[in-house]
View 1 (cartoon, helix red, strand yellow):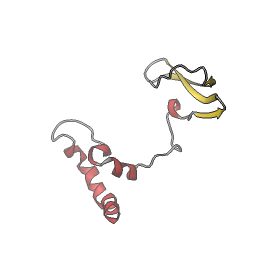
View 2 (spheres, one colour; view 1 turned 60 degrees about the vertical axis):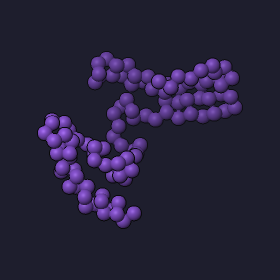
View 3 (cartoon, one colour; view 1 turned 45 degrees about the horizontal axis):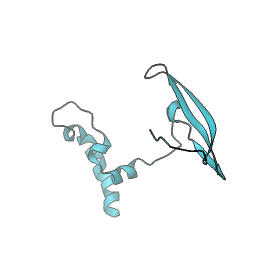
View 4 (cartoon, helix red, strand yellow; view 1 turned 45 degrees about the vertical axis):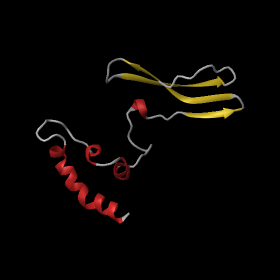
Length: 107
């Protein structure tokens, strides 16, 4: 564990400075921490958090409650895109009767 901690505190700044060189040796491409760190190391540097300044389209988390065979999902996102960067975010709640459920689409 000490070795990883040493890496994050001492070698990470050097890697960040070297990223343009590591990213393509002369090609014009912006490098990110993901280019030089493993998923495990990246997770230690950037902690997952819901308490961030999220864009409005991703700021509200859905949640669900199960009562018998009735599943109520709250804050289902329904975004109307006017352009790629201009949109209206709406949320709604819906109750599903699991006895009547025939299929689920996760796309």
